[in-house]
Length: 406
Image (cartoon, rainbow, N blue to C red; front, side, top):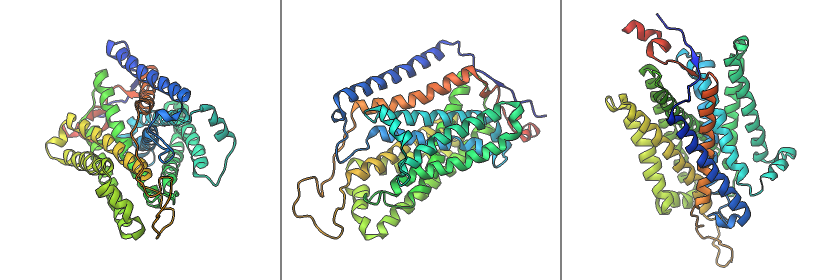
């Protein structure tokens, strides 16, 4: 007989809990210190310059924003597609989605140099700009997901939460499409100019968000001593494998499409063969460590049943995701602009035809890590004060067939 599903706050009285809060708080403090230093000294202390204007903070920010959309996918599967196994995870899924997005937006706002410039972005909209569209999409995502979460947690509103879940599902697809379109619409950059980037970002969000969700779920239940059954965990890791393979498919199609077009041969040679650090990150970290190795681990008949292996595979997907965004975002800027297609520049004085150099500074990395820490500390505090986590995710609780099999 299937057991009743109950939600409870975490106790949060252990020494480990306070060490976790203290560590995350320290990382946030270091990030704020880095922001003050960069604002006071100027952005010349970073690795960014006139050629590479999006640096390491933007890699962190875009990863968190994309992962936020994917983290909500777990709740969407339970609500929109009616999969009962995923419904107990809906609250944590929505919470993590909001926290990741806020962490990513914090990085973007604090990297402006003058955070007060956000007022301009909020009060003046140029609807010909994809960036203006994304301001609306980000704010809308937080609002819709918050309502979705409220409807899930409030018994009186439970009858409305499937409708809210449907709107949240559609909105997050639009949001991630908008994020990918930032690059797809930039025709001046040879590495960006591709309509395929919009759907590729959608499937990237599925993989990154689910990998983060799996790690948060496993850590939350391990640290609080709550049971986490194989039915939930194995279903999630198999789904992660599907998403990893899907991202790999899009990456292959993206590069094959660029190789087919003569105008993109230069940037493809740069990324795939002659790009130095970008080529190494692509083949070693993104493809080998972030794609092929996790796939092998997840679907291996023995290793795939090991919880440490599942956690390792999820962590590798996250590492591969950062590498993928670094190669796309910064590698795409490192390759020189083609100012006169079909012609060779024989004279010039402003980096024409030169590979642009970039090395991330400790200030940029600190700001990015601080955004991640903010997302995690929000989740940690939220599960301490509100009922986000089921007291048990044993197979007999979430999967009625498991009890029958026993």
